Image 1 (cartoon, rainbow, N blue to C red):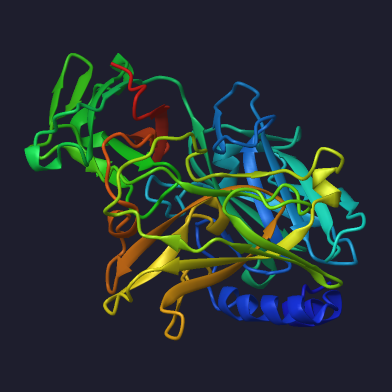
Image 2 (image 1 turned 135 degrees about the vertical axis):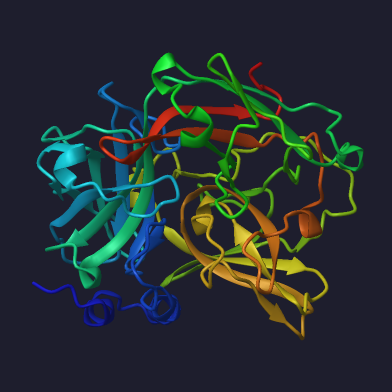
Length: 436
């Protein structure tokens, strides 16, 4: 059976407003080629989650040969169930498909079926909730590194792929020490930027050409655009790799994430201005946001840009959680040489048409509508200059050293036989819990 996106979309969604809304999104997503990124290629598929089994607020990272698993969940806006399948693809440290054959890194079956699903109950629109534990008991991952989870119907030809999702498998071999000093090397960054001081210790096994084969990546919260990539050690002595760059390894401090809570549509939580309930679904209108660039820093706890999918306590979130059109508005002068995006897990941390805001000349503000399931959400506004790939968080959110950012450190070693990037160390820390 071929998975015809357009015909299935027209027959599966009968609600006029939702059909129009998702048709606009679908035309954007379907134009994309299959990439080794967190992307959805069929807009009937919503709320794709991949996390460590048992904890939704975790990254999809598991340790090799420890029996750890990932939980996969997603919704299909459909009235008919399908047997979706998945496979995993090994990538190098730069997320290019590696030269390894699947038999090199998978023992057992190379594909799995997603057969665990439930139909929604009293939800508008209706959907089918799918979930699976990755990898299955018939699939064993033999090598560490970067992986792509590819989910599809029938076979993994491009036209059948519904989404791709990144995950990591690491070996706990390298020891990672970090610090974020108050006074960075560049004094002009004081009170604003966060400098990562980094030292990595490796076993004797990896001493051979360690300065050439070991590379470090550092990721701030869930962002990919500002990730520090392919960091080479500046000195190497007695299993100790130092990363002592003249200007330091520096990230914008940014600000705490904005948030809204729509676990319930019965009341208006902080930052929600209005909830409209109609026969064809919900619309949630958030309070208008303003730039925080020139305001004082306010400390509060966030979830580092993630989302927590959760309905009311009297609802089963998986099948009774409902969707809403969520309207964002940002009062800010127009950027003529740049675009404004909403970033966070709610937009898969992507800078693409799905997260790009539109400027309303009459209201003199940026606007965007996202289709989201009940839950608690974090987000920020970033500015991406035309022709650039790294967005600026400081222009609209400010830049504060005190910001509690979550950092993830990945240590790769280029193995020779077989030839692949081995993930020999992983660690994460918040700005005020660096490990010395």
